[in-house]
Length: 158
Image (cartoon, rainbow, N blue to C red; front, side, top):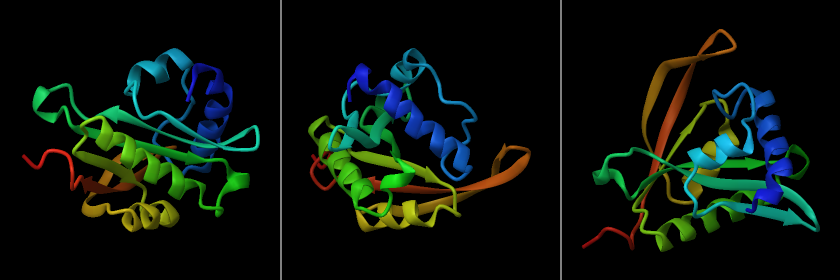
């Protein structure tokens, strides 16, 4: 992903926000805000022809040094391109990239209603570690979040 992809990435992110099933965010941020809140590595886009069809990125789990190898996953696919395996390719490539950058644990927080995202993450080695009940409100409604994690088999074993 390059800064020049931001308009397409932001549009896809805004679609996820509008769905009400992807994030607690209510507005897509500026490039500067998004850029500063995500790790500089492992920012990926999937293209179909010249069109950005989806994106994935990592954000820091914690500023504490002990958690330097733990990151949170963001993954979004444009509505028109869902069901074509783009999310799987993005998440698989994100896992590989994270391991190349010394990330030993990936974490994802997913609304329980987002069954396709939950299923995808589980197929690629994430396991459910908990449910945060009524963790926050979205549009005035309390929402739960399923917490998943994937521990690398190659990073952090020594």
